[in-house]
Figure 1: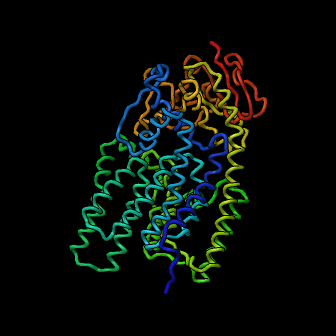
Figure 2: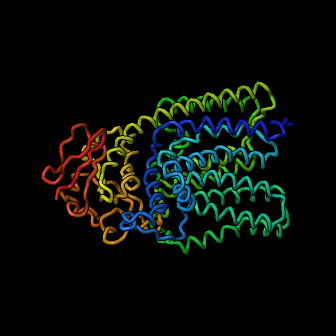
Figure 3: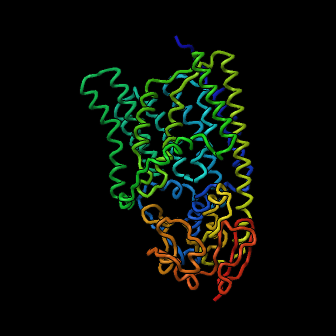
Length: 506
């Protein structure tokens, strides 16, 4: 017979959660700027939403077109906070919140599923920073934490009345709809799997099958109707499936910097899992096995692009991993097992935090000077964002500075060509006549040679009349002392590591 895993009291687990979360948040508290790809762009949009009513320069460039899209969590939650404490502080609070939800969600699932508290699910803190985090998919990672907590709520209410369960599940489904469609799908998969496992085990009469199908199925009808009425439905043709990159999606669960630290962490974790299994102190809930199998089928069927969301499939394994952690138990009632687990968790989390801190600091050292240079632009400037023809690298840093020019919108009320204003994906839109000179299709950053020479056959090129449309050009990922790409039209204002900022001469 399996022994109790931990004490019934939640107090030790709460203290453990606080300690683990505090350690996991060290990089966020100590690095000058979180170097996440989309992060500056999201902050800029939130700044516009929060201040457009009091900033005539931003109001001349942008407007807010509130629509029912499945990506509104940031836009609804943070602008009021940003108006009080500033967008940078609000962004860090959001990052801390989503990290805490992701770490504690598996603890809640474990409690609801096994009926007792355990610190074992806190092992999820080791993957709170991962290969998906660097992209800055803020709504998605918030949704992961909320989806796992929502699954815990559904499990905890499994013996309550059907109307209560239906109402709670419907409210949770609508909440997840505001975060991201993918996390809503994860929640739906969890509900479906739990229902199927329970019904196949208990073999109730058909009326119970119908009741359970209604309780766990009807709550997803309102989000479906909202999606059909949303402008996001217009992006339904933007679907691309690719077999290439499926392995990368699995690696994203564990890998942060693709360095030796990732390898050490994975090997220690695998060794601990094998040892725990051989000692008979590790077990997986039967529903977890079926959820894992169903998740694999869903993952391999998922497209790379879905409703305009890129890397859709490569995000999914991370969300599934956090959910599955709650379905795993360790016999921590044994003192040696408990001591070994605490030691492994401490080592793995310390390695991960040190790795993230070093990686983030290296990228922040590039980002901070770029933002300082942008802060010297005149207010209301129109900024064209480009990339060097001969990119300097390293790629791990160059890739993450792509949206750093969006800070000019925050600091100087500037029009930035790469600010997210894609119809159907964001509520931020650009006013005429500026709508024709910004990227409204979420394309790649154009190379500066393509821009200044006009060498493009791209019909949607928004930069063709760049001399008259913009006041300044920033070139990212440049080599030291890179030559002026158009000396007759551009005057260098500031340069630094991996960037050059020019003024366009009339």
